[in-house]
Length: 125
Image 1 (cartoon, one colour):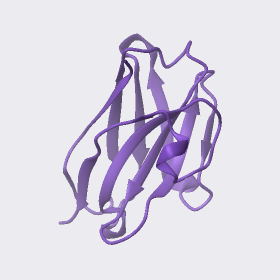
Image 2 (tube, rainbow, N blue to C red; image 1 turned 180 degrees about the horizontal axis):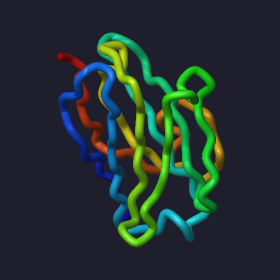
Image 3 (cartoon, rainbow, N blue to C red; image 1 turned 90 degrees about the vertical axis):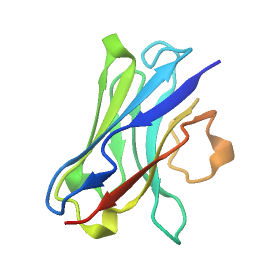
């Protein structure tokens, strides 16, 4: 059974870089032909798609966040990482990692095969 778990700081100061890691267990991020995504949900708002890294290592980002976003992976640890630079309070959200069997740009939970439990990130000085 594939499980995902997000980890990272719960509090980040404005202008700093947010780094979150998703650890995948029960499956491989490089051999399972899947796409590993990051999404977030700001307080009182809907889910927002951030980007994904494919099993091949290729990446694709939301146009609105592309200039500040980087998704990478550590194959030996079966982890993929989100970096979001120059954060502001508007980046405060619950951040989720998810896995899908195809390259989708979607905020519909049912289109993903796997979800993490989510981690709260607050941007505040």
